[in-house]
Image 1 (cartoon, rainbow, N blue to C red):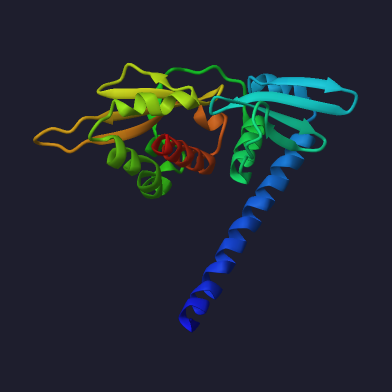
Image 2 (cartoon, rainbow, N blue to C red):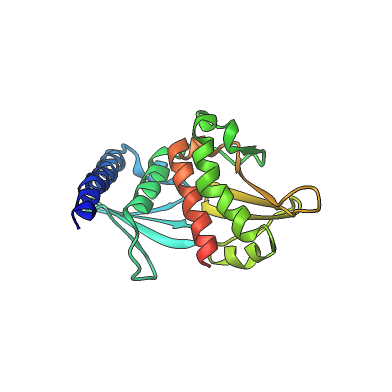
Length: 220
């Protein structure tokens, strides 16, 4: 019993720090959105819709194929057509996208995570948490990812062997590619991004977003 209590006394502060970090990130992102000088223009850049009435604003956008509304000044972030609660990390991703999007058109040029600024440093963690589970779960039967991605608005891409595009946000398409294994090589996978990705989200958020997508695919 004492050993268990000692273990808990070590792990609980870590969880607390995690919650504090997310709480602070949400607070800062909320303040940034609230302080946006031209909210309608920024919504245009993120390809979202802004309804304004007096001092109240409602922003409408899609996140992983689900309609979301952000109400200011209350900073209420909810699904429009579901009572399902958004996790704090999802709310932070939404706020970061809304405040960072620069409105640049997609180029169609795909890049790998390692090509992102600071991506090489984060790649071992990114591979372990976002890419490897795709290989482990879908590698033996890659076509299963088509059905699994439908709830997130996923659709077939033209990359070999099996590939899907998931529109995380309107300006943030995420492309997943799976290569079948053979007698010489085991199955492999990768996650690719439009070259404008860093104009919409920072590297840290891309890491979190891809992990969320991967685990939602597996749950589906």
